[in-house]
Image (tube, rainbow, N blue to C red; front, top):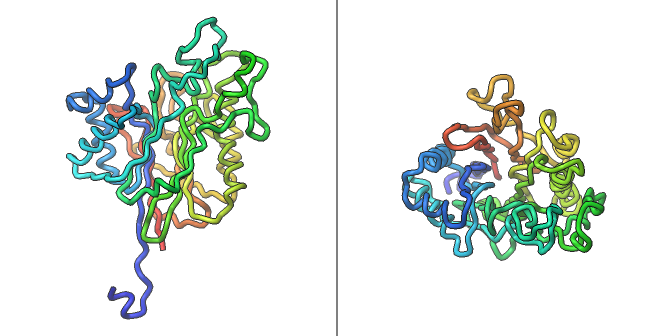
Length: 327
């Protein structure tokens, strides 16, 4: 009010965004809910502590088991509130994981197994997405492209020859979900473009997962061309693809990072894996540290700071955060 009275520009609003793969998934429906309610799981306790340390205004979780009544999500919100971090707004529609295609996708002669689902899952909603926010989520304006068919992507790498007849007509591209969700800020709506791609491994010589992983990232380049710059946006989530190391079609990520309509804050941390300051996950063994989690704001947005937080007791993944200065 004083700034307005004196004719001075109002101070910019700082908005902290974060994405994190917290390992809040278990091998059966309801198990993560039970663990959240009991409160004695050290991995969950460590993940919650890391989220509380970040204090993000908008948080995307890329590994939380979905359930029809959002009970696990509600239990997590209550646990976070107990740490002084209130997220009154949430968005978590049903993901593709565990959603049966009705086809024997992997060709092993059996149906309705995890690899026969739209996205790998031992049950409906395993490894789902959830968006939590301190600011209102404009749910009625949210767009969900999770049902977009893989075959419909321009230049699709769908391995039609390796699929059962008719499967290409139902196989979705998003292994988890593709969302465009506007969040209300003091400067207007900020669109969160969210996804979590499949890993580019655990397949055969047909490279089905590698192809799908690259195409899931390519989807956003096509969406960017279609959406233009009419509204401020941030692309964030788990790409499961490092531009320089590891498995997968790394050129797909390099192409996305080089798009002039995006900016890469290149978040680092002093406790990042030695020699890999940009790594957001450490898978150990021969794989080692990789950069697979991203927050990529639109080129016109002002980034104030960026970084990562990690705790191996919580997850192999680090929490990635970016502070935006909104006018």
